[in-house]
Image (cartoon, rainbow, N blue to C red):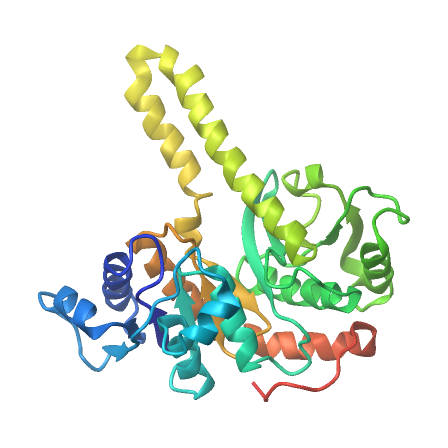
Length: 343
């Protein structure tokens, strides 16, 4: 598998991206990486490293999309940006995947511009893995599609179920619809209509109904679907609350245990590590014909290496093949109509 890594994307780019790529190559002998970015910056970082030039190469890109730039405007003004070039490589079948810790909006927008969708997919969605009281769950979408339609949410459920089963190992994922109440009549038109679609779809036996926000971390469903605006708010609130709780616990509890402080802090860090984004590497943009992993902007080398590994897992588990089959099964109830090239 060859992956285009946006070497210039992220808060600590390009150093962590280069280090992450080198680490991934050591642990994955069948992996090859294209570092997309400015050769004048990347070549010196690689000068002291030992690697197979056939498996790690630099692909030139003269521009960088900043984290605070408007995605569509930046892509229009910077057609040779590292994000745009990475997507062009996948569109031309030169690579099998794109991985980026850069501007999330630009990564998604560049992908949508390629129209590189799987057959039947109307709009791709970003899936994130979250911890719950019962294990791990998948939330789709967290920002790719803030103006979703009911059929999009049904497609996200199909894609989320396949991802949860094949990547997270959940044998029979339960599906829930994020909503403001559990009753059938709750929510706006989008969620009421999506609720009916899910009840009448081939996923009906796995559908547990509407799930309120508090049910997310209680593990009431293994796959939760919503439109991108709500999903992004949920994700950002979750990140902030997790950081707050860890700091509060450290200050209010561990701070009082002077004799056991080091031991308690080490235990707390170990416990929280399994929930940290760097362990999962990134969030897949599901529905793309290929693989796209979107990493946190503050990703370190370990997170980048894990994102590259996660991309290989998606391919090896044939997630895209199963998504196409799953969408065909739900048929016209999801508004599925052609499109995309065969996987």
